[in-house]
Amino acid sequence: MKTATAPLPPLRSVKVLDQLRERIRYLHYSLRTEQAYVNWVRAFIRFHGVRHPATLGSSEVEAFLSALLQIVGGDKLIIPFC
Image (cartoon, rainbow, N blue to C red):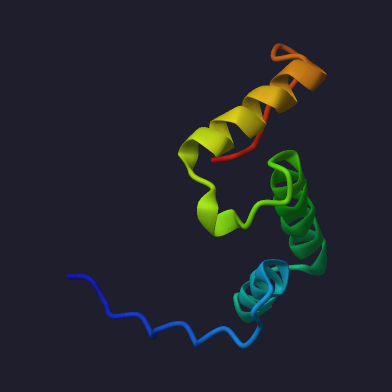
């Protein structure tokens, strides 16, 4: 039997990275985790020409990860995106 979880509170910020920080803090993640997540999202957004993340989909994620593999080298990099 699945237990009901409380709904997440509404986000107060309108900026995407601030919304990410707000949600991470609500979930009580560490400051270092917050910084890492924000840096990866910022890199993803910049890679795609500062487009709004709502306009980006799975093909853009694949392109970003493929570019990371080409920069570092696929056999040398293990990306912990699980």
